[in-house]
Image 1 (cartoon, rainbow, N blue to C red):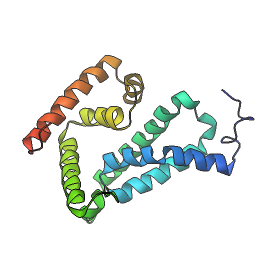
Image 2: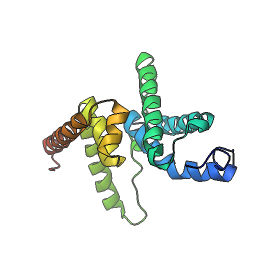
Image 3: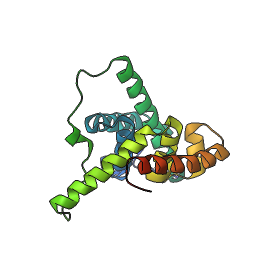
Image 4: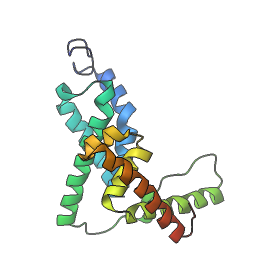
Length: 183
């Protein structure tokens, strides 16, 4: 691993920082969105996470440990946000249209609508999962982390992650079947 003297990111190189943010912002936003279910909250949390990372660049791990470290910071920021929101609920809920931005220029309007309905059902089913099952699915299936990294982030044994991962997939399939999507 290069020393901090050889690491442009840790030395404050703006181009290195921009490349770093571009490389990880999608994953940070995606995880924040799955926790908050609000696009605006996810954008704010993404910005907060990168501010925290920038303030702690000296602690930034090497490439192999970087993604789990970033996702742990994101998860903690989301949990803090949800705790604050629970203590002080919002005055209004945002419009449903802001929940899903899945339109592709290649899809016609009917296909886009069907995709939105499908995504809404999957999202609804994810929200109905138990908290630990939802977290494991988000980290494993959506973020693509390895079982060992998930175990470290959640601070549970690897065996627990493996068994809960299987249970989470079964629970999600049951929820999808119950709302008429099949698995």
